[in-house]
Image (cartoon, rainbow, N blue to C red; front, top):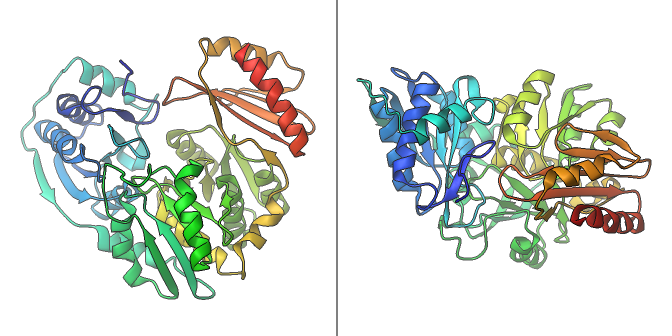
Length: 440
């Protein structure tokens, strides 16, 4: 059976891989590893069917470990981050499996100082204690319930500054974001929103809440064109990712949105550092440099990106998967924070596509997954090629007019390929070459 303990969170089929018993042990192990006895700690959940049961079990494990739990209810993952700040707690847990299909449950853990708990930062210790059911009971644990959504909406509304009225179609994917928007929208002016799939429903009756699968965007794309909207936005299940389509319904890949955000931040802070994950188009670094900024490459995954943000004092980071992390949001990601800034950017021109057009310089395959028996052998073959080899995350090989990255997934038994070239013909030719290299 697959291990639900991943590099940056815990995620598995409910109840086969992650159930109430294991969730209780994870809660108690978290209290032990993070030294939470006698301290306050935030817990929330998304709208998954398994959420109430897993959350109750996690809370009981924490309380038995002597923790004062602040239960913020059904909220987005970024709202839990905000609640940690608002309630001044020692971190928090969000019970979520993010964009995974309905059958999954999950747990994201954050420690004191907004530090993510993942591989190398406490996850192994939590797993070891939870697996061996080493329960430690301490007195004084308690639960207080509080509502922080309006405070979060007020915080976000201060960022809202469009140059003109906007009409936007927003697909919530039956995740948590519809609930978040119902709190936020009354605080925003100059926007007309067309809602799609806003009712929270952990069964995901219309489509998966994963905005990076293009089949999940078809309804949004059609509606943007029908409504003659300025753009469309889609969110994942727990509201920490955001992806856009322009006014023609064309998907804007998230590395290009990273470049748009880089321009926004570099106008505010000339010479600032921005970070981007290594799967992104090389246009991101080139564009940031052309605007006088410094662009730093990072490994994939929120715990690594947050570390890079902190180490490099970067103003923000963008990930190809639609996560955007902000220095002024405690180095954490927020789909709504990104949405508001991108709406501000879109309002600066009549057509969002005009802003994106100059960034569509190169030809990227997007991420392609391969099931392989021996990933190490694949990486060895890749490193033998006559290019510039880098090993920040998996293997990246660069040539004058194309590059590719191969990395083992941290969440699935696959090798992931990203490849980009200066022309479409070169991309297609090199993709065929690398596919044969991968399959041996």
